[in-house]
Amino acid sequence: METATAPSNTLELVFKEDTALTEMMRLRVSSLQRSGQKRQDGERLLLPHEAVYRLDFPTQELHFSRWYFSLSAHGRVTITGISQHWTPDLTHLMTRQLLEPIGTFWRNANDPEETPLKWLEADMQEFGERIAELAKVRKVMYFLFAFKDGAETANLNCSVEFTPEE
Image (tube, rainbow, N blue to C red; front, side):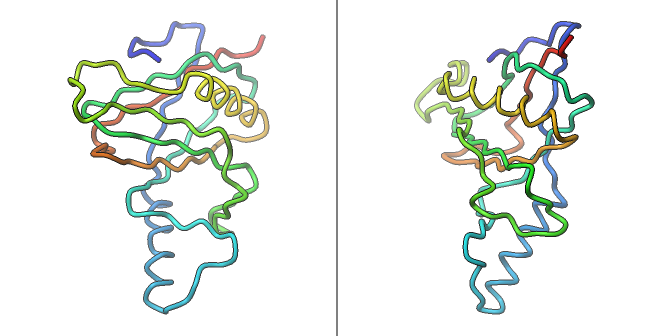
C-alpha cells in the first residue's frame, strides 16, 4: 500500500463512487420505511454510512499487484466486494452476494495524520487476488464502502494496481 504512481507496465484502476446506484439503494430503504414493509429474506439494505463504488475493467486478464490507499484524516474504511450474480437494475442486493475477505484500512483518532494507515495485509492480498479473478468474467465490479469512526468519502483515495497477463 503506497501513494506512488503505478509503473508504466501496470494498470491502476481507481474506485469510483456510483452515486446513482447509491441513491437507488437509499430510496429502497426509505420506501420500505415509509410503507412499513420489511426487507426481503436475505436482502442487504444500504446503511447510512455506506456507499456503492465500482471498478471498471478495460481488460479481463489481470494479476493483482498492490493497493493504493490514502485517508487524509482518521477513521476506518471497510470495502466489501459484491459477486457477479448481482444485477442492480433488476434485483435487490442479497447478503449471499457479498464476498469475503473484506478490505479494511484505518487510522486511529489519536494517531497523527502523517501516521501510515493500518490494514490486515493477508486479507488485503487475498481480496486483491479475488478482484483480479472476478475481472476475468466481468467488465465492472461493485463494492460497498463503509465509512466509520470519522472517515468520509471526501478524505478517501483508493485504487488497485494490476499487471496485465502476458
